[in-house]
Image (cartoon, rainbow, N blue to C red; front, side, top):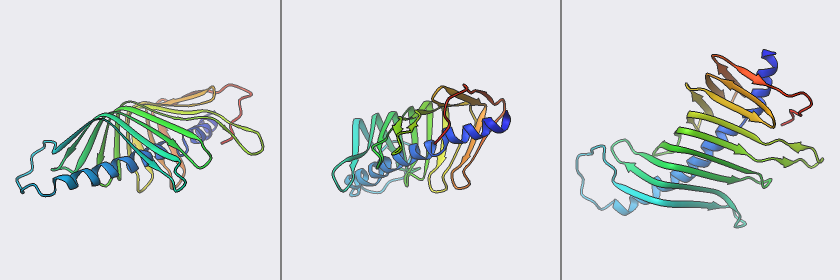
Length: 207
């Protein structure tokens, strides 16, 4: 049973956290690197932990070479702190469409990322949903969902951690754990603490 849970958990969460962080990184990198250019001429002064610029009800979109939408990053408020070179976003929402026209959405109450967008933290009702598609042979790819109150991702190394409970959902299967450590490079997912799962018979587990 434990081995089966681990297998299903790996299928459920494979790439979902990293896709989320990659989406957020692309949008926040643009925000951090483009907006401060408007303030480059300001005189130097000792840095305090106060925002040097604010944004409200913003939306940033990126497109591919054919003009198709790839990523949309939205938020109710954003604050850049020059002393730590971090960007804080409230009510963050993300939409991503891959080359197979597969939609992935993500949301959280707050996001915090460094200036290079290589390290991202999501706080409060973090949710990632990868919508279902059909493979070329007609077999379905089930809807996958990832939930947690906190996610800490290191985009360059492909590692996502959480010291708080997480829930992984694929189709009608559900798995929960008290903490998580996901390594994309090794494709290893560790669910720690009390790991519980509800796996319904007859539900496909193909990824």
